[in-house]
Each structure stands twice: as C-alpha cells, then as structure tokens.
Image (cartoon, rainbow, N blue to C red; front, side, top):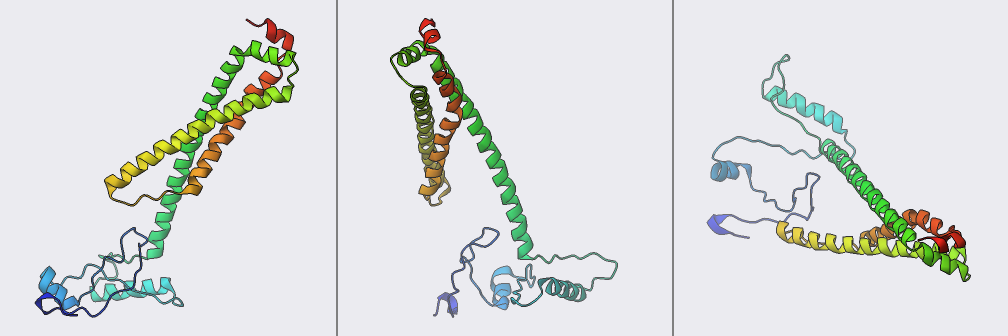
Length: 229
C-alpha cells in the first residue's frame, strides 16, 4: 500500500503482545536496513542484532557460534575481551522471574506482618470487651446460657469486626487502584477472586485471634462474673 514519499507497506505483522522485558512487541515497524541508515540514522552503525533459533537447535551452541563469528568479524585477538555481548532471552526471563519471586516474597512478608498486627489488635479489643462485659456474661450464664453459646457470641463479634475491616480495606484499595490507574494511564481490572480471597482471610483472622477472648468469656464462673465490678 503506497504511503507518503513513495514508501510502500507490504504487510502487517502478527500480534505478539508483551515481551519478557515488558515492552510492546506490536509497536514495531520493519523497514529495509539501507533505508533506515540513509533516511533516519545517517550512519551505517548496527547496534543490535536479533537472532531466531529453531526449537530443535541448541541455544548454547548457537550462542558460542555467534560469539566466535563476532570476534572474527570485529578482529578481536585471543587475549582481548569481547567488545560486544550476546544475550539469551531465556536468561533475561529467568532473571526477571527471580526478581519477581523475591518481590512476591517480600510483599508476602509485609502482608503477613500486617495480618499479625491486625489480629493482635482484634484480640486486644475482644479481651477488653470481655472484661467490660463480665457481669453481662455472668447474667447470661446464670439464666442458662451454655459455654458454647457464649463462645459463639464473641467469635461472631470478632469475625464481624475483622470482616468490616477487610471490606474497608478492599474499598480503599479499589479507590487507590482506580486513582493510580488513571494517573499512570493503564487499564484497571477488578479481580473478583482476589478480593473474595482477601475478605475470607480477614474473616479467618477474626476466628483465629478472637478464639482466645471468646474461650476466656465462655470459661468465666457465673458467680464470680456477677460479683465483678
């Protein structure tokens, strides 16, 4: 298809998406080398060569052959270091994967500490609640409430408290994500499964850290609880 200045478009590349380095492989224009050197760069330098290797070929052997060929073409002596580099995209992908794993582990550690601190806060709140409501617990036990009923009451309160905190956290995270997505001009995708998992973790924190205060409330002696001031 003719374009301005007599250039002609001969085809469209297939969509490849994002590369291992995070660049857009679809944002590429392929033109003849001589045309590039003559009309755009103004020199004959070639900074990068991309080599495609077949599935059955040995990448290690191809890399060695490329290094030998480049040393020969650039007239590099046996005792001289290479003035070029041959990179395997698999090595780059492995390095990026390792970095991603480290970052994931760090974020997981931060999340674990946050959950621990939040759980301890919920446990302290429930312990204070049990202490302040000791007479109420004694009255309930005196009129026939069972230990498991008192235990369930405080467990439900702890779960409700932690679940409300989880919902508030999801809401704030969604608002912050929308703001950052708009600022960075990237699309925002709401992942229902991730948010549900976060909410379930919040509820589980309430069960785990609310059990000790609930058990303490259930084991109170009704007579001693009625005497408490």
